[in-house]
Image (tube, rainbow, N blue to C red; front, side, top):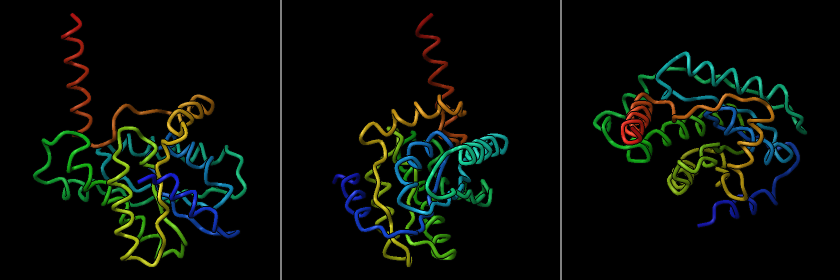
Length: 210
């Protein structure tokens, strides 16, 4: 399934002033996505990421998004909604999956947790569409993300915008914009499990190189 083509087909029918609630995990991932969508939608970013275990890291990424959105030129002003920060919500869905590798079933449940909150808030706040920046990362499973979005589309009175933002050099563009705006780029997803996995990988690489 080419989710990028599905999105482009949807965008052909977007009317002036259509509102989109965009879940975002960080400023770098938001950058190329906003560049692509901000001329079509009135966008608000929902920063809901209880998977980020360290509160200092959580706030650092939030502040980077606010800094970035205040500096960009776009047809419509981009607002940032600070979602509730409660890591217990993530730990609850991760029970029994603590030792699974990144990109496994724990990640699927984490995508669903964040996307469902986005769909719920989009319905409550009166948005027309919802989607997420997650698919811009080559490390995220776009099939899972869009399958979850499609299912949520059936349960909420708001439309899901299909996406595979990494297509057409989207990920490359996010790196370029991160350099242009001097954005903080993290090297792990955010949860304590991905951080430990990353640290273990670095440790093993150092051992193997010595």
